[in-house]
Image 1 (tube, rainbow over the protein chains, first blue to last red):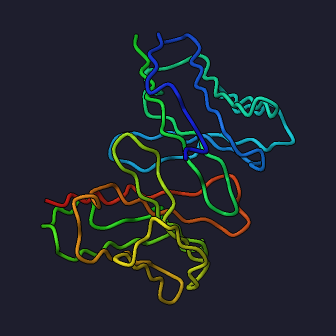
Image 2: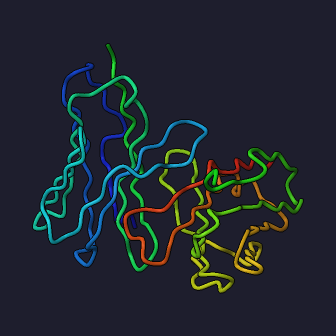
Length: 110
Length: 114
C-alpha cells in the first residue's frame, strides 16, 4: 500500500519556466514532509521541507505548498534551470523514518 | 568530514552467496538508517540505529538480512544466501537525533545478484 504517491513519473519543462511536481499522501497523521533530489549514481539530497502547521515554505527558487485537507503537496521550481534535471522524491516523516514516493524525473531543456 | 561513505559502490554476486556492505556515517551523527531502492521505486526503510542500538526493523528485512552498528560508529548490512530479488541500491543515511529536516544519504551500494 503506497502511502506517498507521485503519479507523474516524468516532467519536461523549458529552461526559465516553472516546474511543478506533485505528491499525494493517504495518512492524515503525517505531519512533516520533505523533498529530495537525486542524481544518477548519487544518494538523495535534501531540498526543502514543510511542517503541517504551515501551508507554504520557500527557499530561493524552491517553494513547497501543503494542502492538508486534500492531502496534497507540491514543489515549485522557478525559474527552472538545466541543472535541476534529476529525480525528485517526496517523503513523509513517520516516527523517525521516511516514507518515500516513487519519484518524478524532471528534465529541463534549453 | 566528507559525508556518509558507503562501500563498495557496486557488488555483483552469484545467487546463494553472502554479501556485506559497510556504511560510515557523519561522525557526530548518532542515528544511522538503511534503505533499499529498487528500479522505479522510492527508497524503502529497512532498519535504523541510535548509537549502537537497533531500534526498528522493517518487515522487509527478512531473516537473511542482518545489520550491526558496533560501538555506534560504522554499520554493516549483511545479506545471506542472496536471491535475485535482493538486487537493488542499498542506501545508508545518518542524522542527529533532533534533526527532522532530512538525513544525509550516502551514494549507495548497488547490488546485482546473478
